[in-house]
Amino acid sequence: MEWGTATIYDRLKFDTNLKLEKKDFIFILFLFILITYLAFNISGKAQNHIIKSDGEGYYAWLPAVFIYNDLNFKFYDSVEYNSAFCGNSQDVPMLDYRKKFDGKTMNKYYPGASFMMLPFFLTAHFITLFFTHELPNGYSFWYFRLVPLAAFFYYFIGMLFFLKLMGKLQLNNNQKAIVILLLTFGSNIIYYLIDA
Image (cartoon, rainbow, N blue to C red; front, side):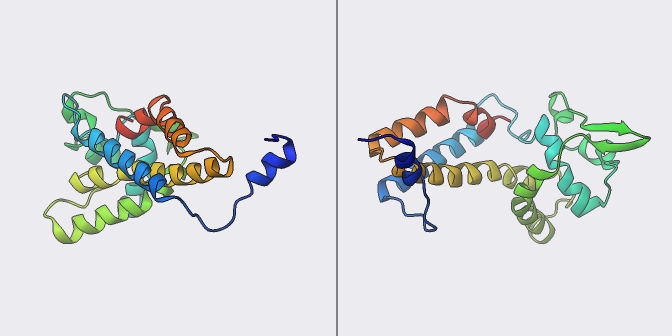
């Protein structure tokens, strides 16, 4: 087997269609379901407090833009800080992601991650508006259940493409499974999926 630069380059050329073996898809689906189950059923954790730490700052862009029209994040004191789903009511330290700059209050986190959460946020907003009696304030039950699913969704999509890459490198199914398990449980991916 030749591992020269041209050979590796040729193997890594992607065609536009994603064809995976049925075993690969089932394996990733099983891992996806397992991690989702772990994330929502870990005992001893404050399960309502799913979006926390840096995630609060990234997520805050969504209610700021789509609900409050407030890029100064003044709603933090009146809504987010007092929400039952944020750290204040659960004795979990809250992160104040707001910083003063030239007399203006700004979010110190970039909005890029919030764009990836947007489909899940809008779904939660729709459910809250039309099917519940909760306030559609961005900090009620459905927001804190659907928005964290974004991480699982993008993990799942990423692993499918990673399997495709490993297929191009001609790894067999056992090697693929070991690499995916090591990547998932041997890196900080599992932490970010379940706890962060």
